[in-house]
Length: 531
Figure 1 (cartoon, helix red, strand yellow):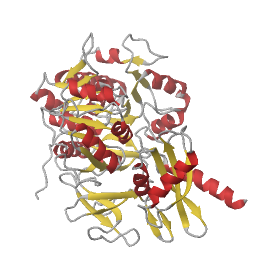
Figure 2: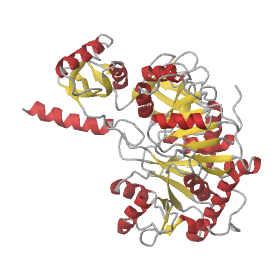
Figure 3: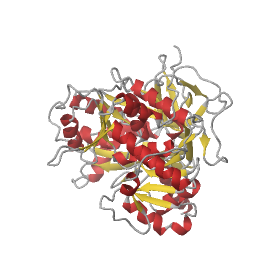
Figure 4: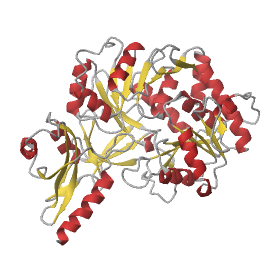
């Protein structure tokens, strides 16, 4: 298969191209119709806003290559600030607006952020932390329509009020220069700053657009808590309309999807899992004729939940695979024919192989090992150059995930390399055990980890969240759940320790906080062994 050809454009060139092709086309729409109607931004308007923000940053920063923090709120202003930053010749640093003091200090100091576009709550924290953020010079508040902002911050309206005349920006842009720094979720340690170039992000936008089958007539319902550049860049590449749904209620998101005749619905696995169990869905999705797929991302959605949701909504539920280091997507199921239990084949222009965990030699189909990926979306490197780059001399990136491929090149993930553990020298995948346990209708959620054991190395520990924790016969129900799961598990996978939890600890994108759980379990196991 010939390698695809990607647009020879800087990242913000995707928006400029969309504005030229369809200036009146809707780029972003927010919320349902109401008395005042939904808020919509056309491609021409979004492009003009990016120009004004670029002009402001040219003056404020006074040079190219400065780092500008942009909070990825679920709001059109994120798109304007994101593209405006790269258009000014500076690098956008993605800032999670849910971060607290420690997280903000880490991101802003590691990236030496000089200017920030953030909502009021984040701006107040940054001003409070100003003595610990010596590089930060300007804070622009993005959600102050009345112009009232804390301290000496600048309201966004003041930035957008200016003319967009810019003369210093050269026409030529180095496509291998950093366009964006995205921090990892930190599930396996301290969040790392990932350097992504214009070429990385433009290529991946094209790859995602092809894999998700997007076109200029596509309408994308975004039911995520934050804006993700994966969905922004691919939609702008395709010239598609994005509809943002900030309401966390999944039924409200379905109603909005029906109202706007959405063709694609994007959601987090935790929300989609809840949607699959929601008793308020009593029939096929009302906009089933327009909706072509529900797309899940962020972490794995249990195949049972995906199947149940697909049956309830009457459309395919599609899963993919990627990470910040991959800009972020490397694999995706075919929306027309999703392969159950897999994350699909590589997206166009991407290679994948499986290597032995110890010898690092490539493995045949169906053999389990570490997943490696090679393609134009592989990051330039980490912000901290002391971090191991995980990219070999031939361009293969070691993902840290364990999986296998079938004869068609479709990837099946087993688990994170750091999450699997050994029982009598047999690898145990927490995700495999979790999927079996979640199949029990009495289980709302669960998480599995290895509990250190002096005889077997580790045994399965299960954290169990019950759908009805107040019902009588708690111990009998737990025993029944464990016994039922045990019939479908190997000897190494048998559940030997159980705790009832109020909720599974998860981060802002719904990923289980496994590293923190492992630390807690090791501490408790050591204390128990000392008795």
